[in-house]
Length: 262
Image (cartoon, rainbow, N blue to C red; front, side, top):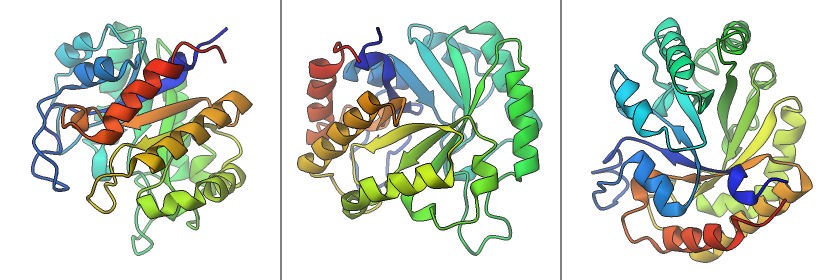
């Protein structure tokens, strides 16, 4: 039987990715170190401001102690080095490193004013997913969806994804988490669901109150036990060495529940 720890993930970047942003102190903690600090065995590595740069093999090798790794093919801010380049690089890493299990599209959906709602069309996503599944080691296609994007005409895009990660950008919107997640389930019945858990209120550039951290974690754990989600993601490795109360609470929480059986 699975333990809860096997279903916990951490969102990761290269060290210092948020330095100078969100009013946060500078961080020196890397992706693997952050995962180990929280006691989490699965990592989603996201490109941030163009980092990491290719070749990626040395970084991927550093992540070998982890059980599962998902690698971004669309990075923070919806950035990409190009469809073919990102796909080819991710497939090559997966062929070399057996803990690679998926490809993530971060910040994939755009604003209402954008000419098209997403980085790729549904047809492009179908082709991407088909090629990921046909890799030497098949990979799942992951995507980020925010609560404030639920009104967008994106059901055809979501239908082409294997895993939907659901996020609440601003802390005040966590009071509607149950309602909004139910809407996501209706909007995208096909993809498996994973709940994103911010340990900092990035939407307002301020610390997240510990009671809100506790509430979203306990709600996520309830949904994990019920089978509504298959995992929980703590964000991120780049804030794990800043002494934030929510990070320390999350670390204790992982230690307390991680070895429980599902």
